[in-house]
Length: 262
Image 1 (tube, helix red, strand yellow):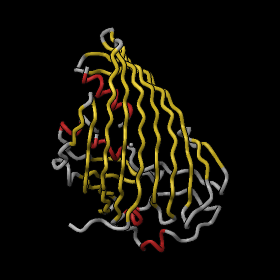
Image 2: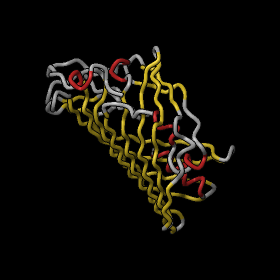
Image 3: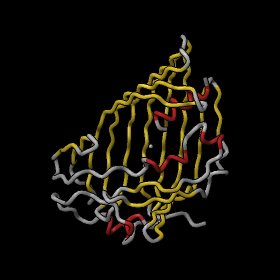
Image 4: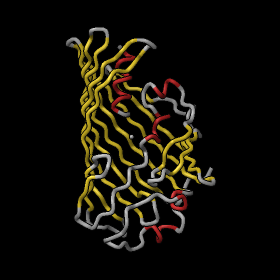
């Protein structure tokens, strides 16, 4: 049952400074600016603070279980050639389940590194993940943190205009603030399929997810702040048993001016 529950939680997903300094980041923007794109120079030497809170309520056979997790992390970013390197500079992880609260020792993860490349569309994609101890992974899939950490970039939009991109994400450009482009976005998706657990056991999964968020973008080529609110309703069936889960997750990330001094 614990393996099924962790898989349901995983299905819900658990998602320096900018070159030129703050003056460049907050330079004036043209309302008709082209679509935002990540750049290596803007990402180099930066750090991001991430706060993730998740609540999972699962029901099976009349029993109900609530599990809440919290993750606070600092990720440092450097650039080596065409590779974007992200390091886990700090991590605080806690869990509350079954009336028991616990704080995990995350020291075995610190210093772990991801390697990413910028795709043709200008979005970082993961090519190498760090090792993460099992006791941490059972609470939060930190190794997969960079899979969807950096937000997708919106299409070119004038202020107060909106559009839907190729991923069916609805984007709306808000009024600029302090020299940054501001956006709101939303999407809904469904997934149904069979996964294999315990090597050979088929797990039938049906998932409906609604997601929304905000993004403040720097003209230098990197996000300044963003947030995501994700609501998922998941039904899974395994060996004649049905598990229903409702997952609510909130993610808030903000850029900070410099990486901590070792």
